[in-house]
Image (cartoon, rainbow, N blue to C red):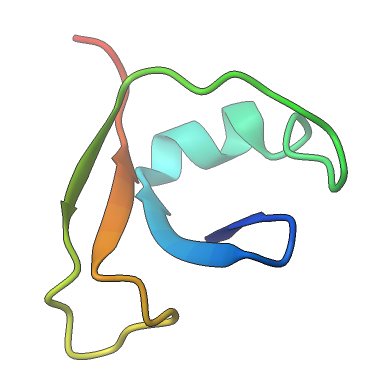
Length: 62
């Protein structure tokens, strides 16, 4: 998934498969949402979908 702020920047993000079903209907274009329970990490993947040096990883609470 790629998150975008206006047209200024894009950042790659990942989400556990179990979370996708829970949140897929909440992610609506042009709508503001508050996101919690995530971490930011270096984007050192061989396959990068954005040029941003970091990525956002979403996870569920234990």
